[in-house]
Each structure stands twice: as C-alpha cells, then as structure tokens.
Image (cartoon, rainbow, N blue to C red; front, side):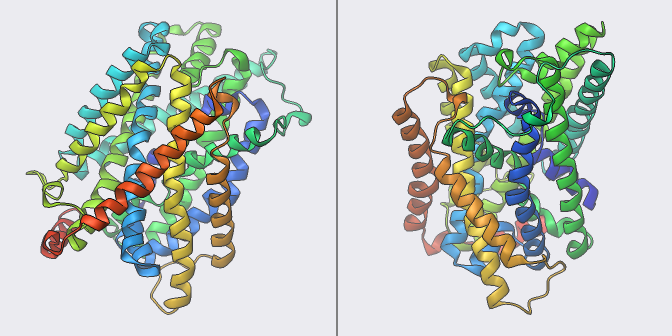
Length: 464
C-alpha cells in the first residue's frame, strides 16, 4: 500500500459531504465551527497519532496498552469498534436521503424507507468486506474521488459562478457573520459535533505495516489527509449556504438540495442522478473503510489476549473476521429499525451522531494520556516521527475531548423540541452501554484458553 492510498483511505473514513448541510445552516460562521475543532482536536490527533504509529505498530490498542495497560488498550479498541454501531445508521441514513432525492424527495423523511436502505446497504458492505482488504482499499479510494472530491469541487465551482453572476447569497457573507449567534451551551454543542467529523485520523494506523517505510510515509499520509479534510468540509458547506436558505435545509438531504438548486439554475438537471450515485459511492467507500479497520484491530488483540470468545475470532476463507461483522450487523439492524419507529428522521440522525461522538471520545482520552506516558516511560524508543511540543498537543487534545464529552449531553437546536431528559437518557445510556458495560463485561468473562498468539501473528502477516 502506498502512502497516498493510505491518505485517501483516511480521508475517505474522515471526510465527506454528509455533514455539510448541518454546518451550512450557519452560513459564513461554519468556517469558525470547523476551524476551532480542527485546531484543538484534529491537529493534536493527527500529529500525536503520527508519532505513535511510527514508533509502535498495532494501532490504538498497542499505544494504550504500552502507555497505560492492556485492559485499557482493549477499552480503546473496543470503543473505536463500537462507535461504528451508531455511525453506520447515521451514515446510511444520509445515503438513503440522497437516493430518495432522485427517486422521490418525500422518501427522505420516511422512516421505514430509511430503515430498509440502512439494512440492505450494511449487509451488502459486510459481503464486500468479507472478500478481503484489497477490495476495500480500492473501493474506498475510488469512492472518495468520484463521490467526494469531484462532487465537492463541482459544488464549490457552481457556487462561485452563481455568485459571480450577481446572485445574492442565501446566507449573509459579511464580517459580522463570522461568528455563530450565541445561544448558550447549545451553541457549543455545534462545535462538539464537529469533533465526530474529524474523528478517525488514527484509525488506519492499523495498516501502517502495509507501507514500505512506515516511519516516514505514515506521517506524510496524515498531513495530506488533514489538508484534504479541511477543504472538503469548509468549501462545500459555504457553497450550500449560498443557494439554500437555512430554514429550508434538510440535515440528511441538504447536499442534494444544493445540487438540485444549482442544476436547475444552470439548466443541467440531468446531472442530478449522476451526482447522487457519486455521493452514495463515497459514503459506501467510507463505510467499507470503517468495516475493515476497527474490526481487524479488535480481532488481532482478542486473539493475542483472549478478550473475545473463539466464535468471534474465526476467519472466513479470505482471512476476514466475518463473525464479528455479522454480530455487529445484528445490532446495527436493530438500531436501524428506530428510524421506522421514530417519526422525526432528523432527530434520530442527530442523536446517533452525538452517541457516536461520545463513545469515540473515550478513545482519544486514552490515546492522549498514553502518548504522554510513552514519551516519559520510553523516551529512547525508536520513532520515525516526533510530534513537536507533544505535551502541549496532548493536554489541548485531552481537555478538548473531555469538554466535548460533557457538552455533548446538552441538546442542540438540531434535536428539535424533544424532552431534554429523554435526550440525556438516550445519549447517556448509549455511552454507558457501549463504552463501559459491554467492554468490561468482555474483560471479566475473558479466559486464558481464548488466547491464540499464533493465529494473531498469522492474521497480522496475512493482512500486512
């Protein structure tokens, strides 16, 4: 695997046009809402994970296990894996709305339709992932190009041409709109939600052994991915705000709303289905990357330490952890049915996004602490890359992650008029169940005979 391919896989797993409508609602202020978490979270995450990956193979599990303890290492890799249970429904709900906008826009708010699409596409993704890593890498990279980079660039170009022809922007673009209107703690939730937009920079570190020169190539791939992520997030969100009024934007179908508005204006409506196909391809490519990464890491450390029962450690004929994917799929399917049971699709989408963020923040809290400990405990350990001012980066990232977790319990205006306590209960319950109860249950139930070091070495060699 080349470092450019890894950068594309990382960008595919992190960036998409999916979150653009959420931030486009705030017009020019979306720049602030993206840049702040990029400074306090994206930058520390990218630089710290680059040092860790260039010195210790094995991904976040090995980093936390070496810096803190093996049980906490399992907690980290478990949360990295478990957050995808809520990530897939929210991602595929966006896919469903994109498809609906071409077939019948009214379907975008139909919960039953959304649930069916989620289940069909997820199980199709499991089948593709079960064919091996090479298929996933190719589909993820091409999905990024044809479904994110090309449509994103087209959206921005059309936006500039639209404004250049003298049309007024739907959102004010003056200096006094650079900051979002302050509405109390709910305003901070917007910034917190963008933490999820940037999460995943470290995920593909599990593939670092696939590079020819990991010490130099992994940091290089991280920096390329950071630049691409920022461009993909900010510019399309602005373009959407230029053409679709904030009070008409849909959280799930907003990208297609903007394309449709531009295409109608330029009389090229025939491009709408093609763009929809591209957007779907990008989202599915990102999903495949997530299916391949965290589950592989969970498998490897479970075989080494016996954290999961043997039934979940089995591989199929392609050397893929199919049983783990299937078990995850059963839970994902149950969660997807919530779209059919809860009337407001946008509210469900938002809640799933928040739970995903909360669970994943546990990974970063552990990672930043482990990085500081490793600098102190193993200062002479060979590292292909040393992050500048590592202590400062880790403290900033740690404080930002902790604050984000607390603020995440405050409902945003995107949640609608639902009960505050119901919101706290759902988010807190999801965090407690996935981030505490289940992983510590596995740790308590683990047995020495579940260990299989030889199999762990074999799977690592096969997928390197």
